[in-house]
Image (cartoon, each protein chain N blue to C red):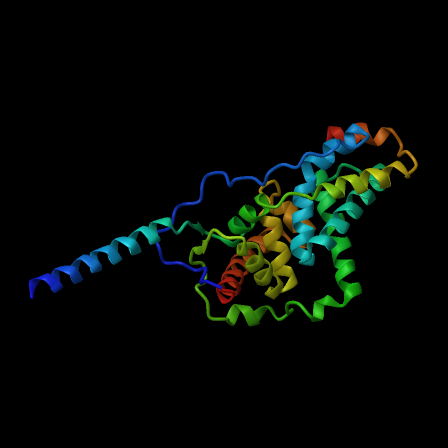
Length: 76
Length: 196
């Protein structure tokens, strides 16, 4: 009688260990507020390089802007 | 789809979130435009992405915003920061697009009290498994919010903006921003938990 019980206990122990390991492997994040989650999300999303490429082509076909604004802009 | 809300022990968020891999690209000319683009393109793209809900349209919008900025830089008075100025162009541009597409009737609701009444965990911590689906859930939650709440949360998420600047961009006082922020957080949390 004792052998089946022992086997059952061993299986239960193995299942418990397996569940414990599974829980430990479950990576989770906690955010205290919505904006914190959005901040994290924003940090994961790069700007596609095609945007800069298209912008460069568009700017190349534009008339040169007045030079004075650059100086004012960089001071702000 | 597996459940994303977990009651398993939660690891605290690292001090600094891991940034997305920087993408190699040819620097823009003139160098001043490159400097502005390098510093501000990510928050501008993110704002456009989350307002429009579509990566391709967000790319187009980001291109258009910086091109408009390039054309109008001569009119920039320096009364606000460049970031705030670019955000204003982005918000106007995206709102015009949304009006054109009549998407306002498809996404979200202007009935702010609807979501405030929704049963939800309020200001409880938002727990999620780290997954690619996080962005999709965030988008669904934002789409379900009244436009004012959506924009408020997106702007407040940018730590470089003060409440005064957020107020200026949303046409309200900084006190009103603080007051609405609590309700916006609560409403987002309720919407987010409904996406699980």
